[in-house]
Amino acid sequence: MPPRRPASPPDRAPAAAAAVGRFADVRGHERAITHLRRGFEAGRLAHAFVFTGPEGVGKLTVARLLAAGLHCDVAPFDACGGCGACRTIAAGTHPDVRIVAGPLDGKRDISIEQVRDLQRELGFRSLSQHPKVGIIDDAHLLTAQAQNALLKTLEEPSGDSVLVLVAVQQSALLPTILSRCQRVSFGPLPTADVVAILERRGRSATEARALAAYADGSPGVALGLDPELFDRRRRELLTALAGLRGADFKKLVDFAQTLAGEDKDPAAVLALVASWHRDLLRRAVLGADAELQNADLAAAIGTPDVGRSLRNLETTYDTMRALRRNANRNLALVRMLMRFE
Ligand SMILES: [Zn+2]
Image 1 (cartoon, rainbow, N blue to C red):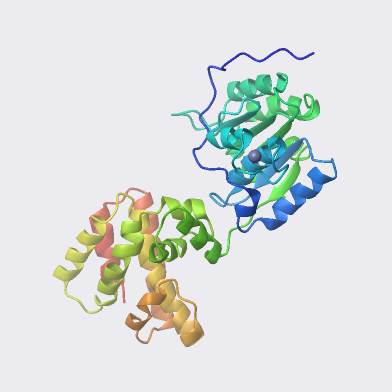
Image 2 (image 1 turned 90 degrees about the horizontal axis):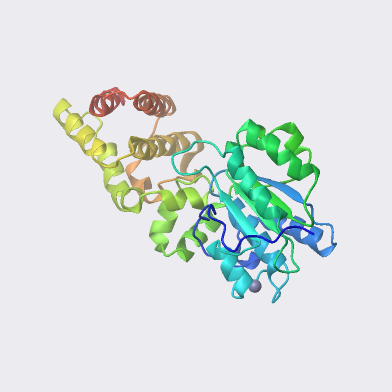
């Protein structure tokens, strides 16, 4: 008989705070969920999964819903969202569901100690009739040592526990790990779904549309963008940028200073600038039917030129690279504006 678990483990990693909700509320991952549901209903759910896909698309949400679905007695597998099991899993305090929320504070990797703690937890007897669930978020950050330790659990699963590795890059995991896990892939979401999720999280419709356009199908990325910059200031900045052609040096320096002061992260401002030149390029190549990222600014585009737009886009990317190498921000931005045609 497995040992009884201690009353409160001292080293429980804090789970990312977010309501778990219900499977029915998840957008864009119907295929993955159907796959899991079929396994559950047939009584053939795998003991280990790797969920892979871009950052912030909902992999961890589905992993926690899987845990809730396995523990919810009100609506098995659906996860009712309201019962004790669903609520404690959402809060990260359910005794039979343990989430390793990436590396510990100040660390870059998930250590072998974190894996051993999880294995110890999974080895304790479940407090309910339901399987124990272990989830490792950012599993691509597991050290090789930690992955080797994990192999033991994958080779000899304890009882009917379920392990879910949530990873951005599958290639960071050892082939021996991958071959013992069922792989479920998650793609980027259609923009409309990202907008709907942002609205559910309290963003206004305009804000949600503006943010979603910059998130590459990832609600998690969109939620991390600054609405002040990407919604309210975007129009102003890009309209000013469009009006800069032929401007004198003083105007360019002033605008570079404005851009430099916009955000702690210069990459965010340059992402906006790049979106503008991409829109011009799309309009030049595809004509009036081109779908634009900054559709509300279409009137400011004028008659774009393919070569010029390409060169301007290249200049923007050069500047992004220079800033990543810690170039002086103001100088790099002035130089970029001077090179724009
Ligand atoms: Zn429930």
